[in-house]
Length: 457
Image (cartoon, rainbow, N blue to C red; front, side, top):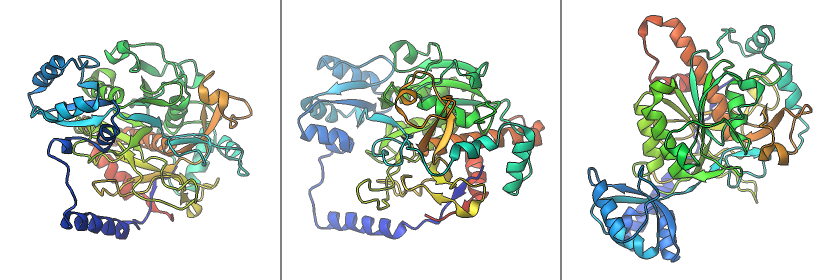
């Protein structure tokens, strides 16, 4: 398993873009009014199109009650008591934006899973499924089962010593479409499951571990499936499943924010150390005002390692040309480990590795952050299939046994990165048992980047 990076070749493009922005300001183009500067680009577009839009409101510090009172007086219904989520008409947008107590209005954007079955279907998702390839990825990964001897052979081919680490004692929260609790690979390893697509789940009530889309199960399998055929990276981690995506792989940003806040508050109770976010939406505003980015930044500040997918917007689906600034939110969060996808070309030799064409390149929109932070295998990986799920029923990439499915995407890259993080945490605990605490998230990221190798585009 190799984590890699690549030379940054986009700064000339970014410099030109910045120059264009400065020139536009210097020529005196119209600037938005102070109230409308509070809107992200999706809310502003909805206002200009005269259509209602679901939003997440950010109140100024200590003024949430004031905002709620103003919304109530205007008869705007707030979704629940946990956050300021509402649907606003264009007139409501103007009214709310004029309130001093409101710091910002962000779209409750639709989230998409970052993995799918085809390298040509990554327009709106960070995961893709794939038609049958001439390269037999299934046989390649089957060759290296969970047995010690075969793992030693694989590690030896990469020039590293087999450590025997399995991620034991490390808790991973998979925030996705769920996890199939009936899968043999996860028996006795899902310590809790919460469905944030339901009102009860958003209140932090446990439910049966399910996955009607199949994406979260695939991600969990890459992180730590105990299968002898398609083994995960860290085969003894324990999982907390968080469902925020529906049977079509879509969800609401507001549900994801609530889930992240819940995990941050209850990290000790749930015994979790890593959050995997193989999902996202296009960047709609700077990171400093993006409520999703701020939620993950708080999670990292609380000591949780957050791994996010970069997005699958790295290639023009019509022309096939590479594109830049396609990183999705929350992959633009400065403190998270943002993973792009690596194509290993069916070999254990790193010299032929390349970035997957669909994998989003940086810099990030608005801020110009250098992302992704690392590349990891995400190109045509087999993993656990959720029985009866949408992906299991619709993809043509099931393994011969039907127990696994092959997907492409930065979702998969985030999952393999999360598995490596779990091994790193376990190894550090074994090396420094007297420390009594884990490495901080920024040290984890630094170690991954320092030990990475460069690859070609």
